[in-house]
Length: 335
Image 1 (tube, rainbow, N blue to C red):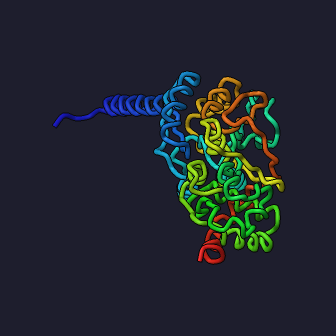
Image 2 (cartoon, rainbow, N blue to C red):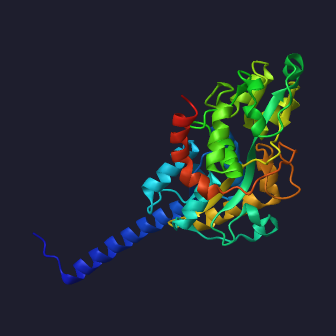
């Protein structure tokens, strides 16, 4: 057997160390060239959004399969504090606020976001909201005239027995749209009066489809006279010529702010910052505005031109109480 000299041992250790260093460098370079994101955006959106963003940030974006908002947040909570992505590109603002409280995110005050209103971003840069939508209602104007039904103007009006069998709203246990509407009622009237109103509204509901867009489609087709839905689903059908009219309850409505945040464990901080910059830029907002209801940069066009009376929505309360409210909903409203 050949005898290994101290010099030989030193050379071997040097070679192994150099080899491991090269591997580490390679892994680091790979991590820096790929930005890993979680998202609740639809697949058809991300298939267009990711390539557009890649051109700007100069690297590949690896995005998770589409997850619903609650499913996505459950994954984040399960992984904490060792997140398996660099950032979240698209999640509910209530979850962004809760994540900030729990120390999940890294602050980044992007200079690009300086011109975007303060209510759409965290003051310390832990999250930024790049687009939003609001809960709304719609009526089939043709059916209202035929059946001599009044046009509802407030959340209270949906409880009028005259609409029994003529109202359709999504199921809050499956639809974020429906939950936003329920949360709006709770925050406008308080829980006690809110539950009373929801019970009375429930007596008029003919159907609870799972999708937030379904009520606007059913009302557009003339199957029901009144529906609770969301802005883009309604206005897109008005633009197509359906006999619809949008209704924003006069007490005001709640909205969800689609947010972006960087995980504290981010391995590709340069790429994450570039994506945040692009989402707040005029170019990025203009691009997102071709897909979404409202963007947060003033003066940038989006799919819904109409503004709404938005309440001072407590998104943290909504996020922390969603599970409880949905459980009580099944007991108190859907019997």
